[in-house]
Amino acid sequence: MRVVVVEDEIRIREGIEGLLGMLGYDFAGSAENGEDGLALIQREQPDLVITDIRMEGMDGLAMLERMREQGIQAKAIVLSAYSDFGYAQQAIRLGVTEYLLKPVSVDGFSKSMKALAAQVAREKQAQPNTLGSIEQVLSGLFYGQLKLDGEVETYLVHRFGIQPKQELAQLCIYLGDAYQQHLHVWKEWSRFLSMQEGVRCYPIKADYAQSLVILIYWEDRLQDLEQRIQRKILQGGIGNGCQASIGWVEAPGLASVKARFEALYQYMDWGLALGQDVLISYPKILRIQAATCVYPIELEERLKEGLCLGDAVCVQNVIQSFHGYFLGGKPYEPKEIKECYVRFLWAVIHIAGEIDLLDYGQVSQQGLLDRVMGAKLFWELEEAVEGLLEKLKLQKSRGEETSHLTIRRAKSMIHEFYQSGITLEEIALKLHVTPEYLSMQFHKEMGETYSSYLKNYRVAKAKELLLGTQMKQYEIALEVGYADSKYFGKVFRECTGYSPAQYRKLHK
Image (cartoon, one colour):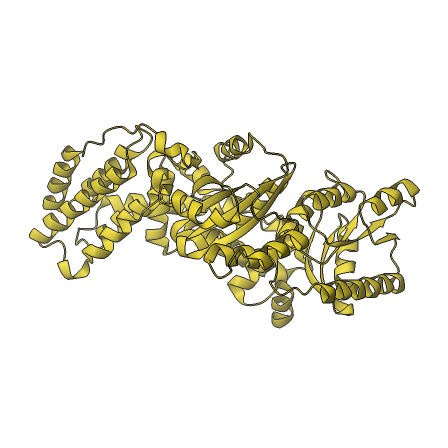
């Protein structure tokens, strides 16, 4: 039996987590308020929710009510320090199975859990869970591993309250090569959508498209949900330190989800022309009036001069001017932008090869072509250019010294402000460079991305605190810039192979 705990008092929350482990139940996660709890429940689809009543923001009963509205049929245990019959009445109306007063006794808690586990087991036996969780079913339909036949339709209706022919929307978040580094964006968007009244959302990992896809259902059609999402994007809501192309498409039912996603996906490269502040809505994107893109031949001529002189500073300045030519101006057709980049890169290859600054054997022109024409984010084009420039035999010059100084200053800011989660964009603003340029130079000189460096620096600081202090995990998480101690533990394990507790025990 999978269990989620929602409790704002950390000692009680951790105490319940410990009891669940001692009693042998499958602990699926915890949250400290109703908003986070609802997002967690949507994501984990537990069999049982244990929640406090009194919490700041959305309280426990309001969370359960939203959960029921969204068709989630988990059992519920309500905890409260208030023996108020009014609360009990409302809890019973929401289908709460147990109503326990704090402090919870181990014996009483154990008996309630045993009774609920038996009830869940009986219900599962009566209705076998042969098709799996909602995420497994939806992913199976999305990837074509499941067929939307009568059995699947019945299963979706009775177990999850989803009508297969109900209209839904899809939010596509394309992340490119940074896909695996930014899966936290999934949680951030799921939480935002779950907070919209009458909305249910289910995430799917579209690995082959380097995208996160969130299926969105609503009880009463929300005409302005698309506009709300656009406002969130404009307010910097894509995700901390994340660059993405975000798209929106509606579908008449589950059977058309994959086809509608494919229709949207081929237009996700409009992020190159419109920037990542614009939601790419299909089929509205078909009506956009694009400007005619004129290739900047004068920049190519300046490039030739810089290459012939072996002047790295001149070449770098031309490259920055070339990038800037397509940024923040008229909306050009993405295909035309990419064709300009191909022409520019081919000019670099030809000229550099002729004057012996480049070994043709080091360049896969087909691979470079595929990378440019497949780009959907501007940094992907910039990295394609940077990858070619690294192969040029240009002299070391003052341009690299400037770059070293920029990166040293960026590192200094990270070390000073890592606890507050300073972003690449904020540092770029302070250093008077573009985020794209800073990202490119940081990766070039440090051998890792900005987000990877920040994560590793935080983990290094966490190690110092684990070994040098008696601070608890949640205190260390806050100290190094993570508001969610569970997420901090996951990041720490990914970097070290150990949980924080295991690391402390191993090195003590």
